[in-house]
Length: 607
Image (cartoon, rainbow, N blue to C red; front, side, top):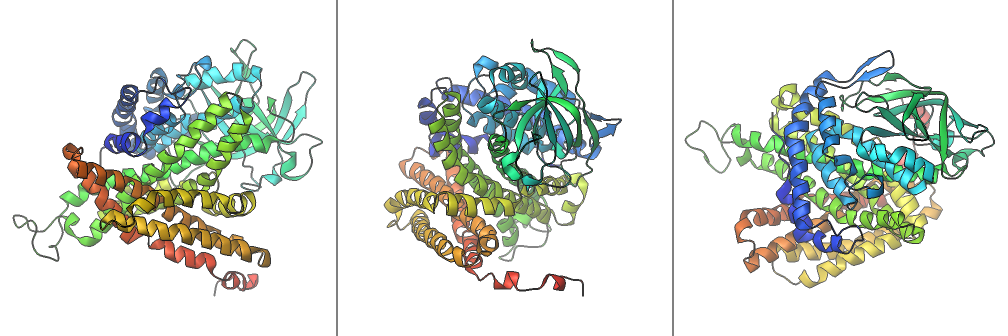
């Protein structure tokens, strides 16, 4: 079984050489402490935690799973001790305000840390991961009392948080939420209802769990306009912050899942549980989107995590396992067969995994800068700036979540394929990555939901295509100086220039046809999202190639020549072997809806 190694060299390449995070941090009001030395120290510390503490629990946690008895959930062996090390290291508070006990660093630090944690052990990462969205929601919409009561312990990690949306009768369609919130004379509310699929909804890692819950007031209007948001603790909290009696929130069961078996996914029953309202009445969905967008960005990271983990497992195996001779002749004449890595199809699979992991990481790190600005604006109470950055980030979020999770699942499947039959058995850990990755395309909104959000809400209705025009303009500004070069980078730049025009034409064509065909957006949306993802990843691969080419030409990269050359070669592979996939998605997005909608429902039957 492969041993996880944090990809610090690649992370530093993106942060310091491609995306210039030192200058970015210097421009932030909370970035003064984020010096290169401080960043390195934090990355090294997180890597040690992940490699030595979390990764060794990944396989055993999957095998053991969580235990449920009489409403109590017990996490797998070693998880409590690992979580205590996580708390003692102050890792939960990296990016949260110092006034609540955090370290006050930019938001992006939390993602860097989460990426390493998630690759080492995604199930474990979900326990503190859900707390991040809980904290962000309370920071943005909570009142003073709620912030003082809950945030310090959440930031410390001694309490954890959840997001309670889904109910038995509804998942994505939150207009069907039935959970009730009845106001009390003391200003609290009695919350009654059942929530399902609640990640980290019950466990033994923290002394309290803070639930962020969607519910309806008695006089609430129908639909999503009648949803309010409440904070409901597992254990009631006194005014001085100490714990009181147990609230009437109980765990009815935990799910038996395909993957992430060491993460408890709970059914929670609220029986007149005491809660307080977050934000304004009937405007809970707006506040909850702060939590959901945090979770969606975190799930996008999961795509990178599983691609990286599967690549780290497949590469050593491909170098050590020998099978047949290379088609071009013996490569290892001293052995009876050549290593798998000499076979072109195996190299294709490995390069695809590498391109997904490193290209996806670049996409996320590039977008994180917007997140840093957005959270700073929120912390400063500048709602106008907050909305501005939130809108910009909103264009990227469904692409990152939808595209990268689909690509992460592909990379995980390729890892099993490299191993052949050995990948299908549990001892190598490759099949676990596939099982763990599968949920990423489902929760926080399926790929189809992300696609509708992108094409329907963000591109067509929200900005009338402006968000695409803005991003493609960025692509063109980068590409133009390189287009005439007779180098691989020149070919990439010319490709990006064509894709920039093509993306705008595709968007306009759908925009013009949609009013005449009400089913078009739904039929075209996933192809549109995947097209957008391939083109966007191409831009971030071209950025990496340009920096690698520059450093090699200047001689500054002599000590890392192999690393930079590999970057260029992986970028070439992406543009020649993976970017052409965008063509089929473009064709699909422009196709008539007739073939999708013409069959009668009764004909969807077993023959």
